[in-house]
Image (cartoon, rainbow, N blue to C red; front, side):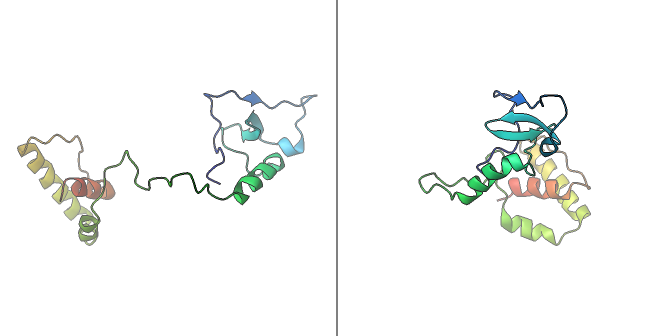
Length: 137
């Protein structure tokens, strides 16, 4: 279902759904917007339970991936690559130990004039591991 629009795009033309006499049809309960032939709820999410969307969703689910379209890159571009060996080595450490390592690394980076705005915290184990992994070869 990756090909189907999941959220209302407010930067594109869309319309509000109205009923003739103002009484909503039972099938349209919760439906607020219409865009590209799809119906959306008031919060902008796709009305997947709507019978009006059911045919379109079923059609898109039945289609297979276009073989001529390149596969998406699994690595998120905005996120730094994480070294899996470092992550595995840190998995056995406690939160406090990971925090202490992150603090030592912060000090070493400052001594080497490497700028990084990350501030280690004991509660942020995963972020600390990402930070350590990012700066460790």
